[in-house]
Image (cartoon, rainbow, N blue to C red; front, side, top):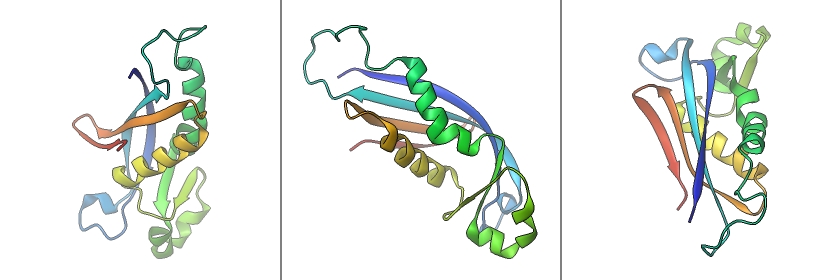
Length: 142
């Protein structure tokens, strides 16, 4: 099996409802998302013209639509958080999620959104979302 990976970066602010620590306050991160896909091609013969699983440019456009445009330079909060601070609903660039915008939940959202947009010839194999340079969550296809 051949897999390819493309790396994406975005800036996002969030706050976590129900967390007893600094992350309950609005703060930001520079996220890095690694997207790894494979072809459903079962044999080891060469890929037909143009010779690749997917054009990296096409993968970039797909992930930008599915994930980056939703989160880049946004404040992401849960409905629960907003119920405690309703004045925040008037902010520009606010993205509201049902779940808390933890790195784990953002990763699961990304998995769902990317999977829905991939052509049937491709399979999402791995996602890795760095919240900081030394901390990340990872999803692996089973």
